[in-house]
Length: 72
Image (cartoon, rainbow, N blue to C red; front, side, top):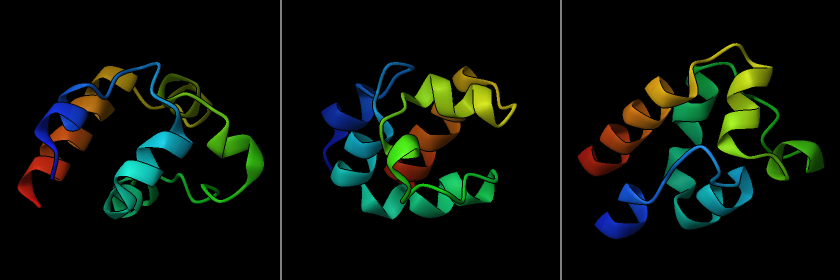
């Protein structure tokens, strides 16, 4: 796992890039109700946009996502 890439994840990170770099992150997104990650709109969204669409605090999700990826 590339620690620098994990630490660079932020609000502006694109969903498509996150899943390309970290396909193992898919369950974390799905756990929060983000089940449409394969659709074109979802992959063109930033992490902040996706969180807003699902009523999730982006800062909390980023912390959880980074912890999840570092634990793998």
